[in-house]
Image (cartoon, rainbow, N blue to C red; front, side):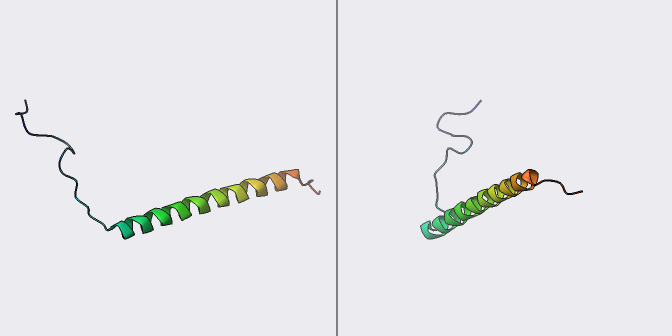
Length: 58
């Protein structure tokens, strides 16, 4: 049993580890990376569709 007044887990005080500028830079780089992945997946899907539409020359 836990005594009263103590909190377990992540209930403690929140302290900043990184600056707001660094946090925004990391968020921006993650957003750019996600956009690049989506763009490359769209390009791959379109390439596969174009390749499937071409006739097979034998």
